[in-house]
Length: 154
Ligand SMILES: [Cu+2]
Image 1: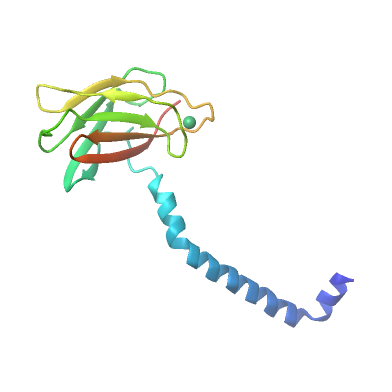
Image 2: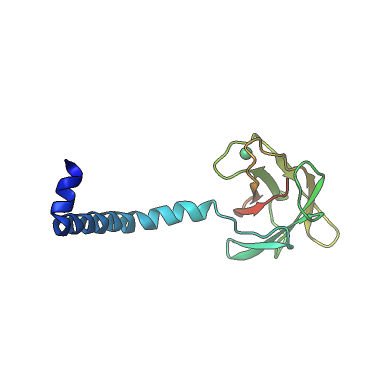
């Protein structure tokens, strides 16, 4: 019965479909800014397998390097943070986690090296979900924090 009506009034049906599509499109456009923002917050912002990554922190450039490469889960890794100038407060530290997932506490303490960078050892675990996107949140006490999001090899 329904199909019969559809075929009987194709012009009306097409116009209605076009109207619905226009409405959906308008709704999508309205939702876009928020949606894009939510996605970019957890999006990869660092190609850690290629080399050091830099992010802005309080107007200065902070760099993170993880070695050895490829950066693999369940291996002893060295985390190296470079800051334009030595922080006045305590040494920076790193919290390892996954975007949108509670992976428990996994903090890497950093110590100052001879050439003024900060280094520490840590292990990235293998997520049971199989997801490989990890986040290293670097906190510089008294200055702020920035999150490096990257892909890890399992
Ligand atoms: Cu996980």
